Length: 258
Image (cartoon, rainbow, N blue to C red; front, side, top):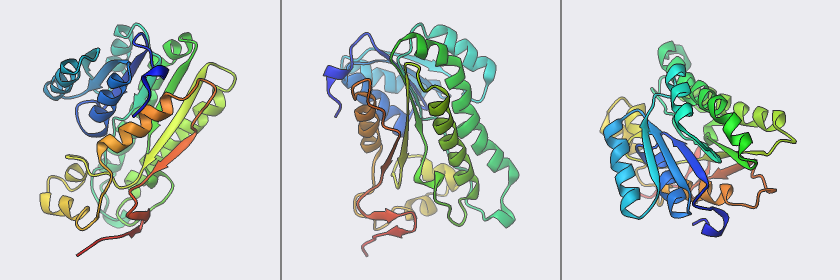
């Protein structure tokens, strides 16, 4: 857990994709670390439920329904955020597991739109406020898929590589400015929706991804990594953090028990 010493209550963290999974866990962790959290996600009901949990723990939080792929909505959202010290781009997803020969270009476009262009739009909209804070931090949540391809994962790997490029390029372009750019690349993380969405609601195929894996990561593990990275002293930038479960040595090397 991040130390509250590094996060003042006056500091504000914006978290996209905050209605479930890693986004919701990150929002909770940052609130516990002393940040005032601004939650953004498409599903207003889920968003308010997460915000209610944070308030019940005494955290400061505001929730805004937002589709990160909608440029006008993102611009309107950014106008409502008075101050932004930390931006955590979590909104994303994977859709489909078809190989290249059979893949639906619409799925690839959808993944690129949310994982790359969504992060780009939100980052662009809040960048002036991040710089104005004098000590801004942008976090881009990618994946180990961003640098390792695998069968049936072409569209997702392409999208997450695009998000990796966004982070790396922004870091180069903002060098000398009061801005850190951090990339967190998780491996196998078991959340309630990621694989289910990828397998189009097929519960048995989604569950099989984690079958027999002793101790896959959970959303709270990634949230802890995010909170640790953003709470380092201002002169310390965590360029890239790869976080995997012990059972996963590489994208294709996963230990499973019968």
